[in-house]
Amino acid sequence: MYLKYFGLTELPFGITPDTSFTYSVLCHQEALNTLLLALSQGEGFVKISGEVGTGKTLLCRRLLQTLDNGWVTAYLHNPNLVPETLFLALAEELGIKDVAGLDQYHLVRRINHALLDFARVKKRVVVCIDEAQAMPVATLEALRLLSNLETEKRKLLHIVLFGQTELDEKLHRPEARQLLQRIAFHYRLGALKKSEIGNYVAHRLRVAGYRGDGLFTPAALRALYRASGGTPRLINILAHKSLMSVFGEGCQIAKVCHVRAARMDTEGARRVGWLWG
Image: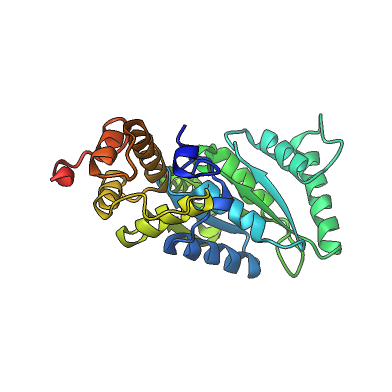
């Protein structure tokens, strides 16, 4: 690949949510602040939504890394489950033993006892649910009922939903209205601003070991922004393919023509006619 050619130690534009490459653009920092505020105030439900590729999973991982040892955390990445299976997955994440074969009533009781045990030792519990738009409405409702577990002072369980914009639509259905009313804090992630893309690209290159001058011309960065719409995942895909083109041609810097080639090879990239003028 092009690592040695550009003096890199690792690929700078991977699409996996690697927190070592985190660059705190404004919307992500605001979203993280919203999450931390909501959890500090003891809210039961918090929701983060956004289009595909805006960094919801990365934000989830940042949150889990930020919480101190006063928190017990659970992470569910595939919530397209019936209620009982979701409770089994949650019990497993919380380290609750001997739950196989329990009916839903006794399973919830076992979870409740575990949450009370955590509360006695001053531990708070948060479950982060990724891809929450995939949850059936019946499972969302079961999750709402589970959130009713509380002491006289505070909730025993905090739930953070991360989902695509379809989650917002699902929660506005009449049968989900009770859960919607429980969500006191929410934030919708957006794309990077045009003014942020240069620093975003430069940051990822630095983390990957690049120590040279700008690897993308200003015009190439503008083209990258327009082709991606500021969506981080698309920026990464297009930047990676652009560098492959630069390497293949034996050039030293990415220009508009390289971004154009990447755009033509990428599904979902914006096809803006005036981009190349």
